[in-house]
Length: 256
Length: 267
Image (cartoon, rainbow over all chains, first blue to last red; front, side, top):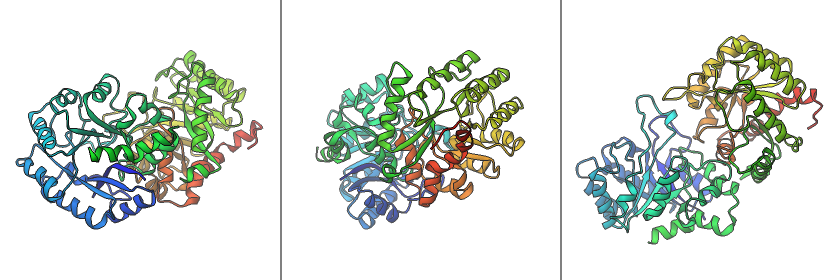
């Protein structure tokens, strides 16, 4: 069993990906032994019709997901009426969480609107995923260079929202040092392995982050799915730690 | 995962970093444990530590000595390339003799001190080719701009075009690989090195389509990178098994055979 907390459907804006058709993506997940996949949509990066986007996401997950795909709606708090989008995610689509792209949506984590969003998500008991980045800044399109999300304001903000569950996606390799330690200390902050690098990368990650906060995430189909799968093999984890990362931590996060 | 069962993965691009160890001997031993876990049979190391982007001759000689020491207990599995700084052409030629003609190394690594299109590189690549050594040049196309001495794939094409009979490897496939592949595809003496950038899907499919499976060589760029993320570019690609075998080891083996034979190294 594997729960992949970092999947995106639809089209990457800058090129076609080998698995950007939902049916093909789900087939690949099945063959790889992924039993649950938390999915948002690449459309969320640039589209403004969030309501339609989340409807397509929910429909794709329901109709093509084979019980594997779990939709995580996109919310852009800079758009008027985002509260309605969030309510739809919860009540209409029964999504367990949302995914945010603060750098693509052009807000900072110390902006008031982010605090408002966190407060409502906490009230709705939704998991909040924050994509720290989507790709290496060095390979971005010259007319759309998007710096990584600055996570520095997050620890202080989380003191006011002790119940919120945050999952930072694509954060490893960028997060380090004191900031990473502060995020670990801040509360219910989880991290996926998609961008963890270095030999034996997960072993290194576990020296910085408690086991129960580490989640399997692949950033598929932007990354090859095998990247995160092989990381489980490269690190000497043992059965207990590997099972926690593969699915038990995510299951616990969903139940909380 | 098929990686574990493949018999002949050769890794073009390895550094003595990413693991703890006070000596190179400790470090390479630790790296080999991870290579074993991932089924990597042979590894090519270059550069020691601390790293220097613009080493003077004493520094690159010191780093090459570290690599030579690291190989000393691993001749059955590890090879090494000499790290050179083309700003010092005379010293580079002397280092080629020391490390390759009279030493155990089998190729050269050129990094970011001087753009490789410059004519000062000619004597270095010619002498390396005389010794049958493999030539590896770091390349990137960075959205934010390259370092002053950092080569692009176009720089390497310029060098390769002046020496069409000398094979050279385009490290990192240019980083921004959609641009890198386009740049090198028609320069037939250039190979693509696959290591040292994110495992972005579609890379290997485009590389095979545009450059061909015979001119692509797997490398990881450990220990900054993982074997996992870099092997995934091959394992996860929608290409033939035959192509995967070539990319994961066959092509590098072919490229290195002349110098290995000359040095009496049996495979």
